[in-house]
Image 1 (tube, rainbow, N blue to C red):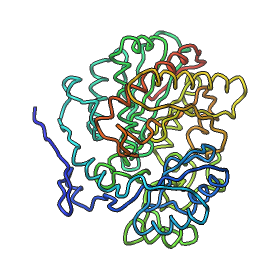
Image 2 (cartoon, rainbow, N blue to C red; image 1 turned 45 degrees about the vertical axis):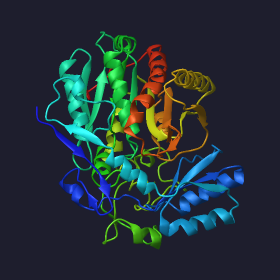
Image 3 (cartoon, rainbow, N blue to C red; image 1 turned 135 degrees about the vertical axis):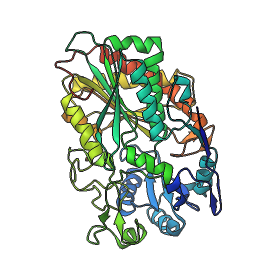
Image 4 (cartoon, rainbow, N blue to C red; image 1 turned 180 degrees about the vertical axis):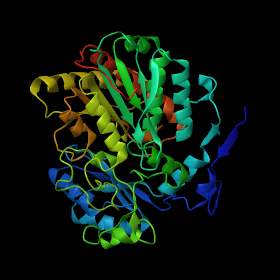
Length: 455
């Protein structure tokens, strides 16, 4: 079997290429800093909410911030905006310190250490290394292998096509048991393209249901739907041009001067002032587009032209709606904060169940001993317009959770979104016990209708 070993190693001007398209300029964010801000008061949090609307662009991004989660947040800022950001923090009396003075060095190290084998056909499971970051095409080949070799309980389908015409793979694991009441669990990862550790963890989830006897036995009583890379176009783009790309790749859209600031237009996206992509997690049809959301297509949290304007979110929403009679849980995987969150705005009985399950999941992670992350349980009591968590509530899914998989550190070193490959196994193995808890809770539920066409 032929294999191509590709090693990305970039120093100064010279850069080895991942593909022919990689010959274009690759964004390494040289000179960008990570500034950590302390959120010690309601005033601090309110100021940072204002910050997130004032600065939402490629060169200033607010990471790891939640309005009611008052601990800290990180600002990712380019060299040309540092003085402006520091002035804002000083004027608002917000304590801060620098975590990383040049994030570009980390990015270059990340790609310098990144290797993988691109093979035409996966002939055995060991051909696919779960503990390496894999390009999208290899992920699809792995899913195809599983579907072809475990036909009794694995089916591979597609949610639909992305903006650029890729299939959105969804894998369903479960045995037919002759019942129309079989409850199901949905897991999705990779709605934000740069969050590579989430798809890697989702692939470990699939492997656990295939090969772990305790997990596998659950497939006689539940179905599990896993979407490992929801934002396939964006994920491919992170391999080819911009590792920190967050959004989909729809567009181009003109930067409207009435909506976008002049400085936003100046830095995005090409010489014709075109902007690309939508934040998929602001594009779902619940309270979409209300005050406080970003209508500038240049922004990192651009909400889209309309609710479900993106095929990626539209396809997932269609799947959820067509399965909502048997879909009892939806677990959304993100990357950065190390907590399990649920919505406490449901009815009291459901909130108690959510709270109990979330704490059991967090305890299972803590007891896994796989890493040092201290998982917190976070009650979401604020509106997130266009987010999948709020959309899921409208579909009567009882067990809605989203999880930030890491705290941004590995072996006491700050990585943010750019986690090293060596962390994949530890992160994934620490989360799988929580998956077992949630899957068992789904097992206790009863469906009310038939699964349908997607698989």
